[in-house]
Image 1: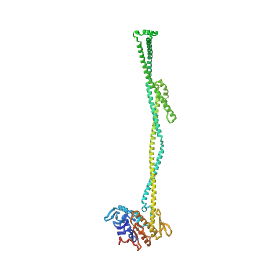
Image 2: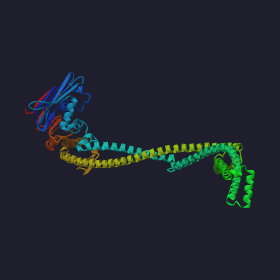
Image 3: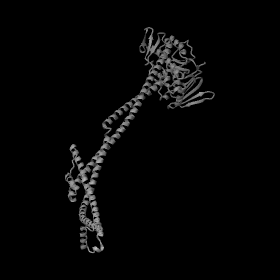
Image 4: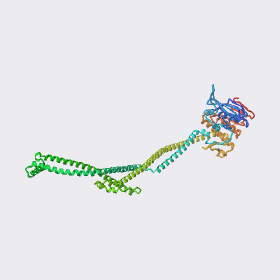
Length: 611
């Protein structure tokens, strides 16, 4: 950026300031006594570009207006890469601030309006912000101080600003990642402790399932035994009188059957003898007997039919006996099932007695079924009546009801334990899933942490490398002008990564700290550094031609050193071509491209460079 034209109305001490036809390169001198307006020229340039000055805060814009004036205006034309631009700013005593940036061609093109938009556009065009401008391009009157290594200006000059920004963001991200990683590790530990506190046994639920199945089978068996016993008891009560009746019927049918069997056998024998051996003496006596006792024997010959009839009657009684006997045996078998049920129940009873004896916490059966058991043989032989079985049966029912209740209670306890174990298993599965997810997350966080750690190491290395090269370049550039500023007494400079400055004293033949030098020497050293910084800033920004403004840089220089410095300044950098220098006076024989003379009592300053 090269200044071509500068104008101001009612700004600070000037009611009117106009500097025309400024050269693109060389020295522009501004001389005058204190309070003559030299510094004002620099502040007008600064205000034109950034809407603020070094001596005024950002919100004190109205103070730049000339005393008792309602408004002020500044204008600056400047060139960048052969293109000409014009910036105009207006400000009133109420703090209102207007601005416009244009590109000057055959037809003026407005690029931006408004203070903020103009500031952004100038930054985009020049690549230099206000802070960088103040720290390098514009040297205001102030005490010489060593550069602050962590300032944004120094970082931008060194080319580490972007890397520093990435480094800080990565550092914050890594700290956050480390915190999240630690939190995840703590959650994994807490989840592990929660798992341990559950005391979960993998096979416990399987064992409970087996116990539940066994208890259910046992309860079903007891319930089945009770149903069978009740059914058998009902059958015994129902069948016992029937069996007694059938016994009587069997006896009633058995005697006639035997009688007709004997009678039939006798008739059949007589018929056989009479017909097959009539001449036998026994046969003749039989025939005489039958003829004497059986009417019409000789005429009808009824012996054979009688044999058939008697045999038929015998068969009838025999069949009736068989039917009764079969029914009686069926009923007896049904009734004897009661004895079988009692035997099964007795086995379970004996088992429950053993379990109660082996487990002290288990309750013994409240009823004794020995009386019922003692009747098993008599029940099998049907020697006891239903009435005799009734009382022992009540004891058996009491035992079975107790066994059912105990079975249901035991089954319910197992089911509650199973439900509890299922909830525990569900919680264990949830915690395991959480732990697996956390471990996966922890592994990912660990990888990201290591990546960020590596990135920080690489960024540190790159920043250190760039800073080292920057220091080397600053040392080289400062070394070109430092001997001229110090009459050769100081020719070498050292700058460490913290920008601690040391200078080599030819008199002491050793490096000395910056603070050991006199105030004048420190000012000379800082001027050399400032010029080096301005060169680096321009090079790192857009690399275009640039002006600099030095306000009272030679306060501690004598005429010889001023001449040497002014002679060296135009050639110290190929980029910094237009050099503005403000001083109370200059040696008479110095040649400036423009020499602007300021006076305390003049409120107007109009300069045409070519004149």
